[in-house]
Length: 367
Image (tube, rainbow, N blue to C red; front, side):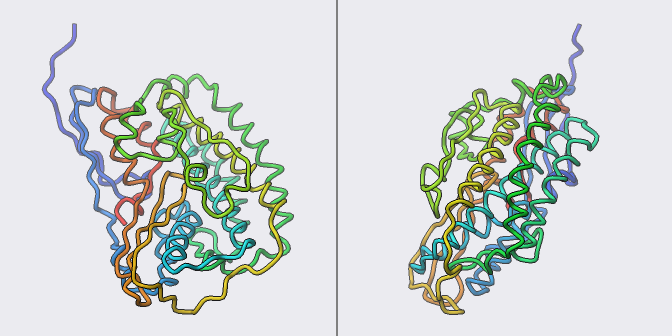
């Protein structure tokens, strides 16, 4: 016979190490069943948008690294695309290929972190996470060859990239492309049919496609619902129109589908990088541009399909050397708006796993 209990409101946080920052959820429980959820943000606010208005267009690139520091290359790309659109600057072909290769390697590195921590939330006690970190380290080694840094990269520039890839980069990249599919196979043998993972993720945290769209969610969270929307296809930028790849989608929009979509996207990213290696031309890696870029008065919006979803920068210029206004459309913030719909009716243990399946970084939530 069920025992009637009074609803209890509990604060989860504001400390939770897997959110890459400080986050709090105010949750109302009936026993262990979730009745209501209120996400609470703002503990990591660093004022990146206002800081951007006091720096030159080139100096702002370092701020983008710190938004989602698990995906710095993608942040660089979204920002420089917005500035180039605003200033009517066109990077050379070789630079665009290098940018796309870096962005796709970054997608793999970001998804490895997402999958590893997602499994950590399930109680995997570190083994899958360390496997994922093992491969991510190889990507960080490649980034170190490109720009001398591993996390906050600042590799891209308005009109191109910081420097060309060194000779040792290409054999190291080719070796990674040959090895990585076997590691993905290993992950799937270990995880995809695992009975614990299936029991804890299938039909859990379901988000129907219509709700996902109404929340303006994007990235793997949206595609897991069966919505085929990817900016690399819907609004191609750089050289994405020259490479062949398909967009993985799920069916139910549950925790399991979000895991599967990220695994499939890593395979597609490897395929994109392989094609870029075959197609990349010789030539300059940066368009000649003044040290202090002064776009004409106006506004522009540049966006990319970042690992977590649509990342966009809206810039307003008054003709000066710094943006007059800078507004960031961050996927971590937008995707978190769907959290309440995903959690109501589930239990406390399901909440931890579902929250991990969204894959957010508080650096770009609070900005």
